Image (tube, rainbow, N blue to C red):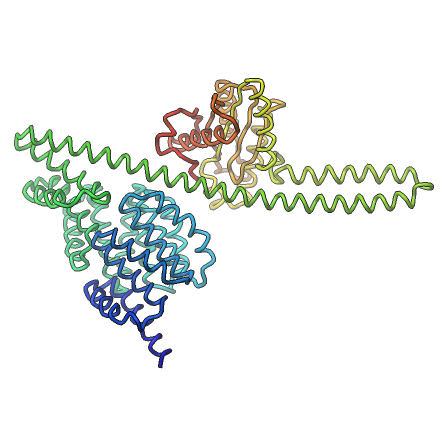
Length: 573
């Protein structure tokens, strides 16, 4: 009997999960009823119930209550899959209240956990929650990456996840201003979701179509689609989406010169609270109101609205900087964790190589004793052979096998020693970091053999430009570093420019005729406060990140204001 009841509660929780997508009021009633039967549920079941309660609070924009539900749920369960879901909803809630670092800490800790989850559907579901988080963080490339992964896992397996993955791909295209692709993707998402009876996600797609048409100036179609989406959102009491559509309609009706409607929708937006998630909507609305006041000749009121607009714009700019800072720091920390793991693996490999050398040495010693009196020449040859073996193992442990230049572990150690010596003589030291542009595209379109070919050609192009004491290091993937002892920033910039030009002149003919190679460079020199190489490398990373966002294929020197902006780590291309 107990097993049957347990199975029944699990089934009820599954039904509530579905109702949250179709009938939120019924879902709320079912949740309240189950909470009255608290003692009959297992700890894991009640944890899941609290998590589902948090989704209702998310719809209503009550993010603090959502976090309270999730925190309680977390204390009730040890199930890995459920804890992962709880954590990702916590990240969503933290983003809504502007706690971006907390959100990204959760994402960072859960990325490795997701890979360990059992079940294709569970993993796809986790990927989709990640897409929502990255969408809020304006990391649209990551949205596309995880949406594609989720779509691949859920296609013909889980219609709901497939539907949401299509929506996220469309949202990524819209925010990347790829409007024709966005329109096609939103259409596919809406039609598929309606076919699968998933009205909430279909409504999101309908709103997306309205936003695309509004961007393209197709105002009549945009009006129909946005009003349709607004009506469909009402039963869900989905405050965030409703407020967004009100702001969009305010802009739309102003463009259509239907000023009373524009003012009505703008005032609806201005009546909501100033919590972080509402600021972008209020910025849109207050600008419409300032334009309307100007048209009415009420210039003082228009000025007041414009001051509010500037305040919201500044708040959003600071929010974007905070998001980017948190996001890039999280990526940098993850990269450092990966580097530490790789270094440990290399240390183990080096230790194994050294053990082999020691075994060969012992073998050599025993053979030498046996041949001491009768084979002095053979002993000499064997000794030379051992010397060659030792050099070979040492070389293997120090060099990158593909390009033949120093690997990251050895290169950084040598550079750190160089830096200490230069610092002792109060000299100058510069670092150049560069990353190949669109390298993933080369691998995806031409294959990894083409990528390896490019890495070798880049090494061949840069090496002749370097001095005898300069260190050329492959940091990993398509990222390289050049360490320049006793070189000031001007010399480093000149060298970086020569390297950039040499790389841009690499020709793929005849093997890869359509291939084009370029790189983005960041340059930095030491400052009086630098006591180790790490600050220089961090600043060079920031400058390289700026180069990527300045159009790529350029050289950028680190500027002090970069540390106060969103340039806090290297963005993976």
